[in-house]
Image (cartoon, rainbow, N blue to C red; front, side, top):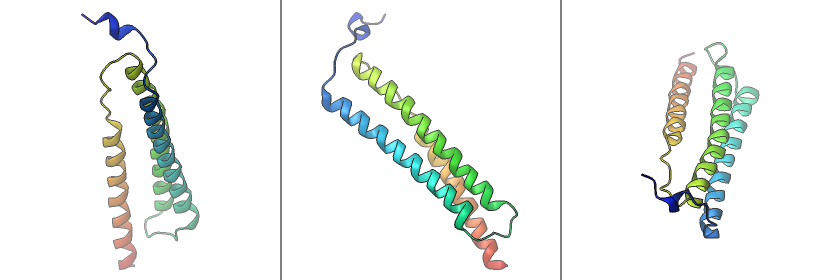
Length: 119
C-alpha cells in the first residue's frame, strides 16, 4: 500500500532540481554532438568502398541524437516527479541503448576503415 506522504507533492531542495536540470542539459549537449557528427560524416567524410555508408552512418548518428534528446526530456521529467513525491529515482535503460548504438557505429566505422585500407 503506497504511503500517503509519497503522493503529496512538495518543493524539493533547489540543489536537487538544479542537478537534475544539469543532467538534462548534458543529454541535450550529447544530442547536439551526435547530430553534428552525423552532418559532418555525410558532408565532410570522403566516400567509403561500401555504397551509401556515409548516409547510413550519418543517419544512425542522427537517430541516436533524437533518442538522446527525447530520453533526456523523459528522464528529466521522471526524476523531477520522483524528487517532488519523495520516491526512489527511476532506473534508466537509455544509457545502455546509447552505449550499444555507439558500439555498433564504432564497429561499422572500423570495418569501413579496414575496407578503405584494402582499396
